Length: 420
Image 1 (cartoon, rainbow, N blue to C red):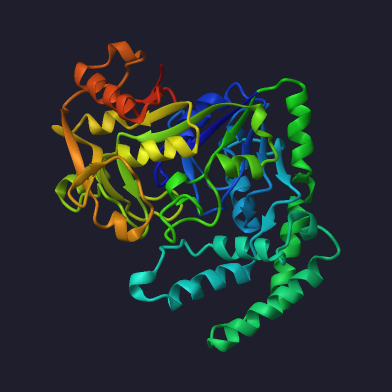
Image 2 (cartoon, rainbow, N blue to C red):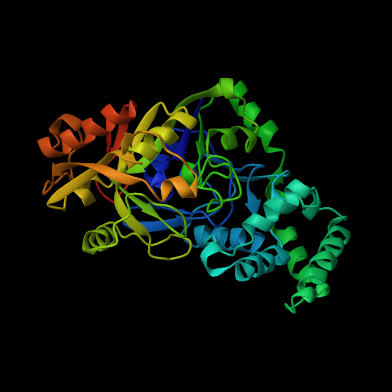
């Protein structure tokens, strides 16, 4: 049986909490898409762990942590993440890396930065400049380097071809060129350290499925950053929706059971792009501070606003969500008054249609319903014991989206969760 955890908005919804909860009983956790531009944190025994590439299920001894074929890997970042875990006495012997996953090379990061620099000021997409997009571009152009190639005798020749190509581009723009010998020397050291973890993860996954073991797929980023279904072009370069889970792992759809979609009691976004419920005022600033809304990977302050149920209904449909995970109920409860976007007003009419088109989104205005705040939920373990104001707010989320709430986050620690 396979359960999936996916982000339902623009990322940073707190997927790590429910992943940590579910992975405690999983024999395998799988990361399927994205690169180290994504990240989530898990707090265990008062200590926070930031994950960028390794599935957070690795915190559970005996659980296989798999980096799937849909992920693009910066080996330097991966090795640093492994080093931090080892320092905290967390074994990485149960880490498995797909031989089909693609490698992020230095020229990808340089190209990422150059491309963003060349965009007009009002056309920048807010890339993290970690080489994710160019690595996926090479994958689709069929000149990328897979992990199986990275540890083979062909790596040096493949790297030479690509470095020469990118250096020719850099030269055109008077951009610093890469030194081939330095890159090869550095990356061969990485390959040597990672070789024992690289394998056919599809075969590994199906051996687990054949044994009827429980597998959890950890989504990275979120639905509205999907390359196809998000707010293009201010999106990521992969599919952090249910389709990406399937193609990025090799798991067939008939094996998938629950699809948990994670949201917060408010909305946030990093980088450029439309955001209908964004609050450019003191309330938005207060939500940011109360929710500690700063990027796990970038440390950038996130744009904050009220929860947008028009968007959530859209993402729940494209993901076939079977249940919602609603985090930060404790955070929103600290506000005196809470608003919930239940529709848009577009061209004088109310609508529940979410449109990723910039021209349309820029003309949409949120239609709000107001709820009472000033409630406390810390320490509560049952939904029926929540304050009536919190219950009304959660009930309305279910009514508008048509999706039941399965988990509720009531605080920052791993124990602060209600299973409904």
